[in-house]
Length: 587
Image (cartoon, rainbow, N blue to C red; front, side, top):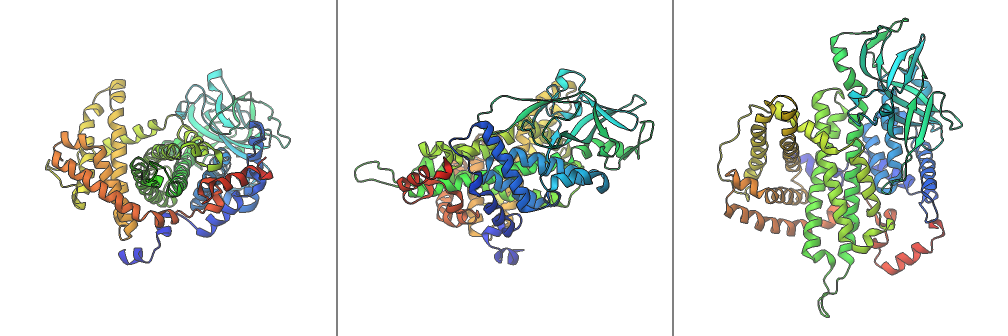
């Protein structure tokens, strides 16, 4: 393994997927024809995003091929987040949720009419799951599908069952995948199933039985969010995305293949949500990397006049350097951790508990840190961070949209942590001994001991019956989700520590974690006051070492100043702003 790592460049370690495809996407998504201008209203920006989506589809080829090739799908998310933030709400529905579901959950003949229109962009894909009443707890959705002689009809039984949030306000042709409870002709409720339908026709008009109401202005991200209700929307029999788990006879009675099929049904229906969760986590990590690239490059050029004779660069100021370098270590750790989850997902069973939980953990661990990183970068850039021209401010909207796309991201973390607490129950907690934070092996032990201790401490809540126990375990479950993911990330960093840059990242990541949780380690007898002071001292040294590797780490991100076109990346800031303000393409 070490020999292989020595032959692998730092950029290859950080990248997941094809360099050629990444470069192709950068070129497509930097097309000046789709620049956001000062004159555009929010409605015009929405339309511009749809125009850019059509261009992206035309340039990268088959939507189905992208949706089912996970490295390329993740790349589309990543580079859209960095270079074309308005696209993120659209590519999620078009590539992942609609095309992905149609490609994997039904036979090719049944999917063909819909996938054909998605492939060439003549229809835009979207998935309709969340409702007023259930939010993203979609197993409790109330939208109802029933048999209608030769197919299905979908109805909204009450106002709280209206589909809330999907981006379908712009009147363009739509292929939707809609979730509904199927109640068969025998009156049996078979839970949530997916159905394909044409939500809007070629002229953009809602299909018969569909009512679409566009929601209000959103300040952070450009989305045409809407409320959708159904009144006997007709759905073809072949448009049922059953994943071959059940059959429906001519009388409309459903029969499961077997008991395993029944138990897998819900996991099958939401399988593309698992892919989408990781894709959104990945693109937020990409936004965090871009934010750090821009902020740190700027900080290395920005002179700060402190006195008539003292004019350090901004990157030398401790509150700037230490914050951004710590964020850099955390972001690279999550990049490698996320890449390992991506690799396992590509060959994994999307309906298995282990796969679903691993992605829930990654989403919770990556996305919240990405938001913190983007926020810190924007603030450290001062007034320059306020402008869309410098990119970082727009990344905040992407972060908030992705984090809250399924409701509160902490819900996923708490559910995954609760599953972990049950799964790891009974694993012995190491003996309580003082550790040396300067020792690599002791650092690993401190991470794993924290994880197992939290598992043990959470068991009391798991044995408390009813709602009281489910609520009481949430703080412990969230702490466990974070501790377990941090331990996994540290293990991945160790695997690539033959690269001196990754070794420097690993040291800052580990020591900053121990410093952050120093009180916990003190109260559990794993560190003493002297060890806490040792942690702080070694962290300062580790930050110095990481600063030395900063240029090569930023270069390995695969970004470049010309493509980002942020004025703060220029050596001549006044000239860069003058050029941008006078560019007719921006007005």
